[in-house]
Length: 189
Ligand code: PA5
Ligand code: MN
Image (cartoon, rainbow, N blue to C red; front, side, top):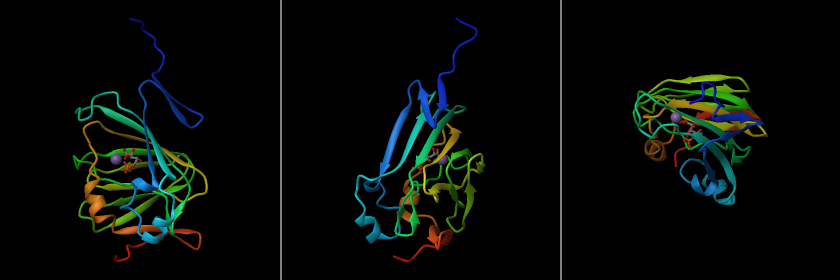
């Protein structure tokens, strides 16, 4: 056993490298329940890449007391006036919090209370750090014209509840209004 060992993971040149990295991609075709403008959504190619996540899970999913790490890269783009964004979720164990740190690009962290009645957003820019309280749904949108990347750190027993967002969405959507990212009430379908 050596006293000094090399780090198992490295974040350099805006990519995560090292041992056992999990990589996932979300394309337009995987995101059919999140964007409001159905016609604009249908007009985009299903294989258009919207975001990628590189994660490290040092302990089994569900372990109490551990931590997970993920880097998300959201590509620039819009569906109608709505920016490319992540699916969004609550944590399955609702009281679990999370920290995001923005590395590159510009975006918004969109947050919603547990009751689904109040949605607000925090501006993301390189170096901005975001503490996401438990009981709060979170999704990120790329409001710029290059990749938005950010690191996320969350408890390994938090889990993801995508179902609630898939059914009810957020109470507001983030749209481009004359070049300004603006939260507006969700149009009734
Ligand atoms: O843990 C997180 O909250 C992030 O790593 C997200 O999982 C990531 O940004 C992708 O978003 P979503 O899980 O909502 O698709
Ligand atoms: Mn999360």
